[in-house]
Length: 240
Image 1 (cartoon, rainbow, N blue to C red):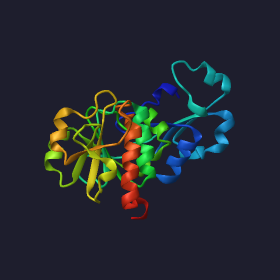
Image 2: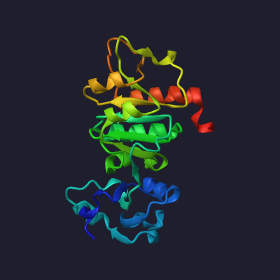
Image 3: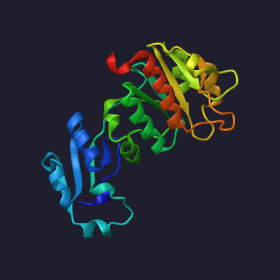
Image 4: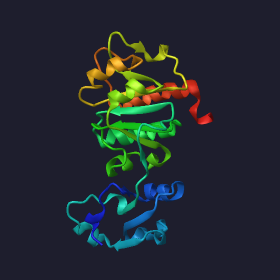
């Protein structure tokens, strides 16, 4: 088997590291398809669950060109279903132009840990199902419903939920003065320019994290973690 065959497709995802692969096997019904694993690690995974298994020596791994063989194991699984705007569960997070798989993976890990149920991403955002995002999230994407919205403006015009923008703007609401409801979501904008300007008028309001005026903006994943934590503290999501 060629290691280069382990690429994400519409029907599959790719995960690496023993811990992440074991999590997907233990907590999801995704079908195990193909596994490449270092020979001294094969006892750490139930390799008989995979349709195809390639056991590699350390020398063979070192000879692999153009691939980052992360912690000795890479596997493909059937892809989780990606939903449209139907069935979004509140509270939820919308990604608007968040292109970094590291940020997306970090956001997944945070909101899954805080008990959120849905993650929405638009056409401009990195999919949370790409290999790097799955690795950074430690496989926790399996605990979220993933929704892809092609026209975010159209969704915001029609949704029954209160959706809030997040931005460090003068006329925005201090996050800690805001009382979130059980029927809401918030948007995290791109790492470069934030939320698209035409999105702001379609939101219920804009939330601002109070930070030093010398800093101006937080990283997208950090801003998401702080906002999601405030919702969690108010709604006790893990106890719902």
